[in-house]
Amino acid sequence: MKKSSKREKELYGKARFIQMGEMISNIAHHWRQPLSAISSTVSSLRLQKQIGTLDDEELINSLNIIMSQTQKLSSTIDDFRTFFIEEHTDKKIYFDLKETIEKLESIIYVLLVEKSIELTLTLEDGITIYGYQNELFQVILNLVNNAVEAFEDKKDIFNKEIHIESFRADDKIFINVEDNAGGIPDEYIERIFDPYFTTKHKKQGVGVSLYMCKEIVYKHHNGDINVINTKNGAKFTITIPTI
Image 1 (cartoon, rainbow, N blue to C red):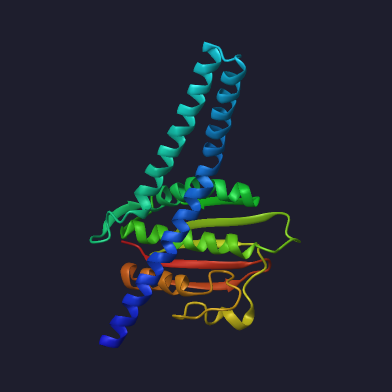
Image 2 (image 1 turned 60 degrees about the vertical axis):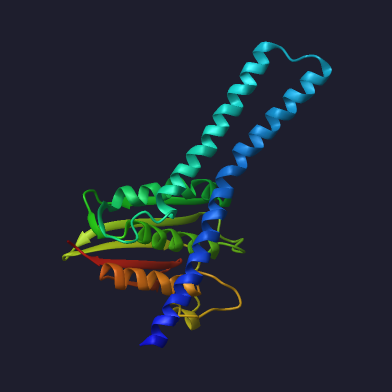
């Protein structure tokens, strides 16, 4: 029992580092454009000042651009703070599933545009979950990030798509995350939720993250998570009992 508990702590610790890396990566994608705009504006101001062509109107316009971009940076911090700083890890809360997933879209939007991936959401209204909102959010984010990774080196896929769906049926809540990235190799698909399982090339989240996803869904939400290969990709399904 002690050995199992120690292993779990090690895995949770490693998962936190993985989540921190994903957070920093997503923030970097969001900050790249505003920082570039600020840098270009400042360079332009400096040049105009040096050659004596800077007038008050141009100065005010440039300062407004800098202020606008600075506000975007601040907004990004607020968005990420809500879901990556553990405000509710010590207690369960009631939260709206649709609102939670829609906020995920705003966080990864820049990354998806950069990778030319289309995200579509089909979310049923009025689904309330009693659980750990931040943890479930990170599970769904991890599945989406895994799908993004699965598109790497797939030069022959031009219409890259990720679809998130949520609905209720038979006293259960279903969350599907599906992509068209080609699927998971048969030799891996039965083992990807195993602790410490990894491959030389990490695709579709093969590694500790998927084990932690299963732990969060199973132990903290009394649910389950599984994966199948579809015609064009992989489909992860999270199942949680209704309240």
